[in-house]
Amino acid sequence: MFAVPVITFLTDLGNKDYYVPLMKGQILAAQPNANIIDISHAVEPFHIAEAAFILKGCYKAFPQGTVHIITVDSEQELQPACIMVRAAAQYFICHDNGFISLVLDETEIEEVINLPFFAEDLVFPGSRIFIPAALAVLEGKKMQTLGTPANFLRKGNLLPVIEESIIRASVVYIDNFGNAVTNLHQSDFERYGAGRKFRIYISRQEYFQEICKYYGEVPEGEKVCLFASDGFLEIAINKGNGSGLLGIKIGKTVLVEFL
Image (cartoon, rainbow, N blue to C red; front, top):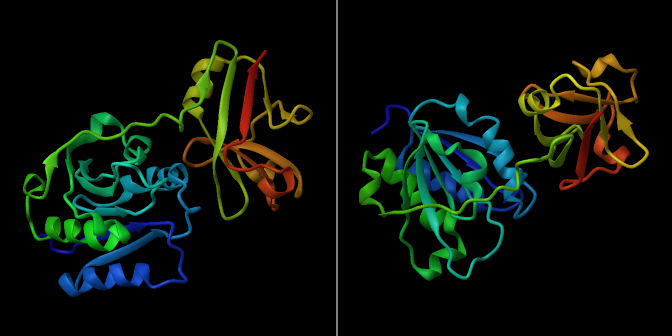
């Protein structure tokens, strides 16, 4: 058993309904001292790429033994599966919908199992499948006793398309300030750009020719392009809602052209 169990929630369930409190109640009834962390319940419904971006940005900050419960699913599969993954000395419980491949490097993954369930459990898998599995791990049960060894579905849609002189990035997340975050990391930009001049297009007419170090390098109300604290390219407006004012939505292509 864990001395002070840490369990996180990442869902698209919102804060209006009883679903999240129900799952928390199940945990606290079995583990009264559990430290429950709400990563977010405001993920766009069924948007696994957005959920993956959020968890990828923070899971490494959590202590060993943390159990992450992710209930975001893209769609109802013909053959749905639920998995538990042990990676980076933490546990991840989610639908097998490609989410794990968007969050974790395969070199981090130590063990993967399919979690058993009945068809009726899919009405509320978070409560009926994920929570029992999480509690079993916190009680000290080995993963191999909770399910069967498995692989996991892989997706690659969080990766930019990189060519010799062009990088086709896409907006994968819009934060609370309206800043549009792309899937282009600074390390890839610098490696493939190799010091060349560039243009970063957000439309045919609008582009950036320089990357700032912080928002305040431009006057209030002006658009700005920078690498955020997590290293990903971000389009914003200083003291403004960049995505709203610039018409940027999740999935939009951001084209980087090296000159």
